[in-house]
Amino acid sequence: MKPSETTDWVTVQTRLLRDPELRARFRRDPARLARDMGLGPTDAELLARLCPDQLDAQAQTLVDKRLHEAFQLLPGTVANLGSGARSLFISHALRYWPEGHQRHTLDALEFCNTLPNEFQDFIDQREINRLRFRIAPSQMRVHWISRRSLSGSRFLGIHVLFQRRRQLRQLQFGIALPEFPTRTKH
Image (cartoon, rainbow, N blue to C red; front, top):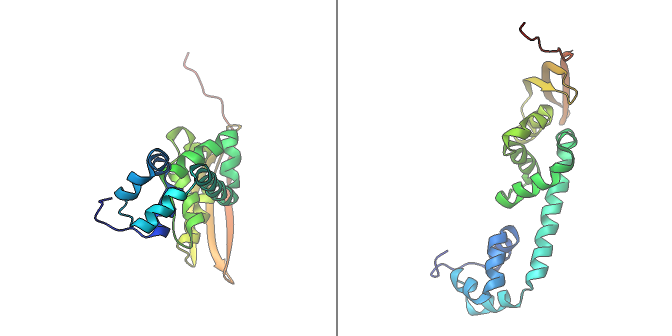
């Protein structure tokens, strides 16, 4: 941010809570950060009074709240990811911060969208369909789903989402296919 720009105090606090690099700059030199952010003398003094450890603790609390909300929306995906789900989410949370009244839904969806390739098979596609439906509801949506269980069997089917009395309803039709051993050439 250019020194000539002015920033309001709420924006400064929000940015500090969202951005670990900004908090590290604050920890090193609060006066320089205040100048870089274009703060006036009163706001610069307020910034200097902040406790870096308390900022870090508050930022961690916000990430934990986001994790809780996202994991409520993604129980199947989280179960599939197992013990690595938390660290994957925290990595996501440091790069992305959702805004708006649908921020929890957007956060959960973006978390799945940005999972590394080796974790894509762990995503429960039905959960993604529900999240997308919540963001842009319509009368009805039909999705093709194909998923593999942890035991190796596959499920092929159709996932139907619709609203009835302003409530999300869903149906799933399909077939489960057992795992077939691969044939080797003789």
